[in-house]
Length: 424
Image (tube, rainbow, N blue to C red):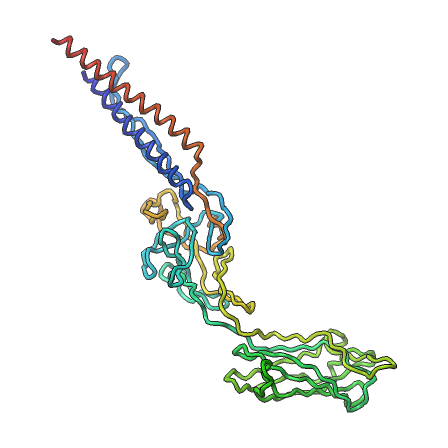
């Protein structure tokens, strides 16, 4: 009787075990398209009663332990969104379940997009965490978990850059008479990103010697007077071969006080390289049929007009950049990655996220693209590690094992009936 009872219990444990196996297969197949999902495996282990012999064996059946291999890397698949993020390595994104929560979880599901308030949130509603930075990319908070905050990429204020350097590449006519003046218009920008025009006048004062003067600025848009110019230094000298002679030239600086509320600009005017022709030079420029004139090649300045916020981009090291339509980009956040002593010890939560546990150890926040944490890949998502062909094979095996266990129960039931009949 005890052996028959043991057989019944073993078969029942098999039914439970194979049911769990079918459940894991079902869950894996259901999540075959879930970003960052890690496949679950039903791991079986034999149970024994602790005693038995060939003549009187009483087993205890089977136990099953569903486990996820969290260290298995899913394939990174390209997308068209710069805020879709994948990790090429072992790291984890740090997320929170609200924009102001300081309780953190970890995920590989990087399908982030901006919500109505500008926060980066994945499709399961988890908020991506990062460190705020200044425009040079320096983290302005603690680099521990306490310094993390939900990343918000709402429209940033427009940005501009004032002109601080100006260079004209041109040939001044060597045959010009003393007192001849030649002009070049240059567009510059103030600290507010407003465009102004100044006129540079080159007057020949002696052999191989010229003098520079600069007009007051006018608005490039309508030529309205827009400030006052002060010039420091004016003499420009050339060698007998037409190249620049900086030893006998002044260091020239242009200071402009604007009337539109912008900061006063100080612009360093570059004459070019000593003995070179990469800036100003002096050569014959006319033929018998024309008067001498300046030959202008380029006017180069480093100011940038006012620009509107257009988008964000994220690099491999986790820097989040705000981009503007005038070409300026600057850092606003830095995304860290979390690593663990034992990734498989993480505790699964709803939404393809995990919590740290005593088995995983505490999260170690590191810079992306360093060590085993891996690089952040913008415009890519990590696909599920489910292999549908493998899962269907597991399903067939589990179905056959379940049917076999059912047959055992039917057989043992018949044997019980035979035994009771024999007693009667």
